[in-house]
Length: 72
Length: 130
Image (tube, rainbow over the protein chains, first blue to last red):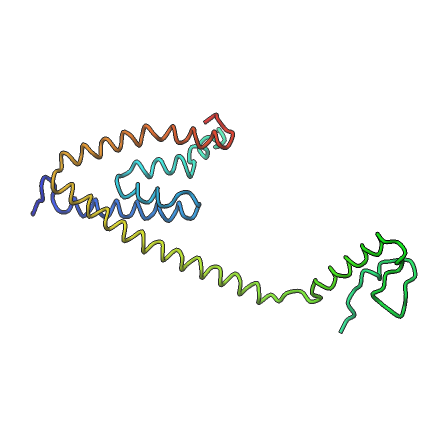
């Protein structure tokens, strides 16, 4: 197996795919909701999975859905 | 063709039959002004309702325009993304340890900035309780 630096090339390819998918999804979804698509898209290209978690919490407000769930 | 409805038709008082657009009471300036304005407004509004095809075409054109804009934005984002990811992977390849430190710092700053962002966002909306 060929390695570059400390990581095998498969790791680079996986990182590329994960970051590109995350960034594109954030860009498209934020654009759909008119919430700073370029900011979220570019941040989504830099790291994973923090941008997605922050986006879901801040923009999509997942915590409000959890809070509103009726208690059984 | 059906005769266009005229505001004068709503007046109960008798009007001048020779002129269908004459005010029933020209002596009253307010009534005359009101009548003329209503008449002008009536002339401006078309009798026939707009065709359904017109709305369908408008919706179709708007959707097509939005789709084109979306494709253009995505193409632009793809170009920027490729450049950023190439730099990202190159940095990781050249000096992995330093790059990981850099990413760690960015992560810490992001996590620290998130509650501040949520607070500012809700303060603008008048909701301080998160």
